[in-house]
Image: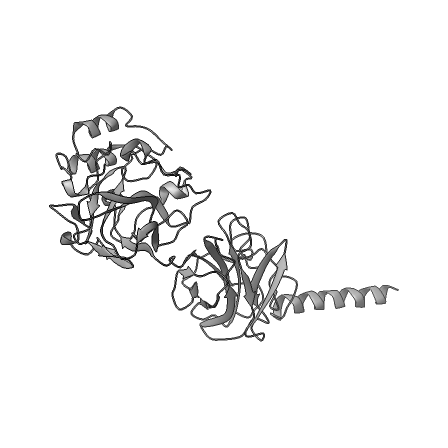
Length: 411
């Protein structure tokens, strides 16, 4: 009996040693498929990176490698019910085995669209709790990087924004020890085709106080300070009903978008968003902004207003379908000095905190009367970080006595 116990104990030790050193599908490496809910989405795991779990040698994104999502050859827009190719590339110098898991969700965390496996050797899909995941299948061996390819079919019309979240595993083939886990998010918006006969336009502009030379801050969005209803009734007497139950991750703030005809009459207005890259979008996140009831044969001037910056108007009257970029040169704006050179690009002047088209002591008074407010959506929080302080004073002081050109006036 004692001899049998000793043999059995030795066998157990051998099995444990084999599991820890072989690098083949033991209980914690999941080389076949990873368990669901490890795509680094909000509330999901990241394959145990930085903590208890499978691949805990390093914190998430600690290494020198990366994971990248390429949607439809770099596009950031989709059309309903269309199928697109997605490539996920995991990179790490010296890595010899690679895996990943990706999920597509709406802004509320619900499943978005569906996946189709086009290479069953390296990829597979699984579902849990109403959420579909696509991930590696029999994690391939490669040197330094590996690309996984699969298709995604978009949801029905009107679904809105889709967020892809992915975790990538750059492994050394030695089990779960010494593997690097990386995460990435990519947000895309629904491209709603323009209704025949309606005027549409796309545009790009920067807000001086929120632009750092690369992109604009999304702090108001990240901190949950953006109002769900458009905020321009007080500042520009605009009473539109635009609202959003949630916001794409790259939304900076609300803006008011207006069109004028040749007689300087405002013929259409719409509250929408300005994104981190300066793109304008409607309240559904569509960057091709459509104005129902305005004929696509019109030639119109584009105006953009924000509640802490002076307005700007296009230098030219624009045809339907135009893409207009205010950021490239000062003469893109009509009239005199509507745009200011900021970090190598042109942006709207900051400091008009009461929206009256003048930067003066009235704007200073708004700031001074509440110059220590925190975690509020306020027009005199010029840089949009949720804190009213001396930085917002500086935004006003630098442009003090600046008067908006009459071409930007609204009724």
